[in-house]
Amino acid sequence: MTQPSLFISHGAPDLALSDAPARQFLESLGGTLKRPDAIVIASAHDEADGVVVRAPARFRTWHDFGNFDRRLFEMRYEPPGAADVADAAFALLAAAGLAPRRDDGAQLDHGAWVPLSLIFPAADIPIVTVSIDPRRDATWHEAVGRALAPLREQNVLVIGSGSISHNLREVFARSGGGREWVERFTTWLAEKTEAGDRRSLVNAMAEAPEAVRNHPTDEHLLPFYVALGAGGGRGARLHHSYTYDVLAMDLYAFGRPGSNQRG
Image (cartoon, rainbow, N blue to C red; front, side, top):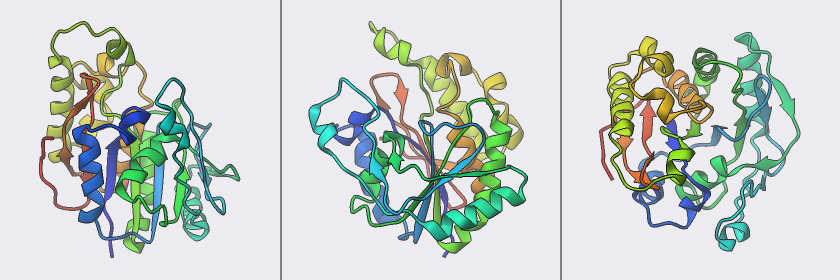
């Protein structure tokens, strides 16, 4: 069984409690996927120097946020680690010259546990976390994904979890106005992804319209490139909606047929 790779916009932690279209889509997504034997996930909130691979005996929910509904702090999502898949991922990354490191840490940040709790709520699929490095560029993260691509043929689902737009200053300063600047950026990404235009995509921060306004810093876009590389470079946008008015919640699938879907 060959799995796709996915890019998920995880939004704010309260996605787990909201009635947003993105939450509804993620809750339905698990039923459209063949059950993977394991999941490898790269979250925008898992930063390191280089690439770090983690698969403890069991992950612990990390409430890496404040000032949200107290119910979020009572939630737990604690799947087992997939030690054998972590070994395979480490070997693939090392063979690609990416100098991976291992870490025994068990904390699972909200960029991982919130979307996973909606897609696979039982927390019974073993996972591996792979870090991002904000000091490295899109091409480097795409190479991480390409190194992990063979795992898909072993029924491992590879996920990049970030945000297709991530200007929190605009979120907190909103006083009306349009979001055409987000639409221009996200439409460009969707078109280039469906065309398989890897060259343009890895240069999105320089070439895409309104890129810097959507991503003043690009750590939430970097997991997109992990999914892109793992999925072979051509994909489809499966979902497009908004939360907090200007945070686009796009979801992409690579390596399988897909369709545009607006929530």
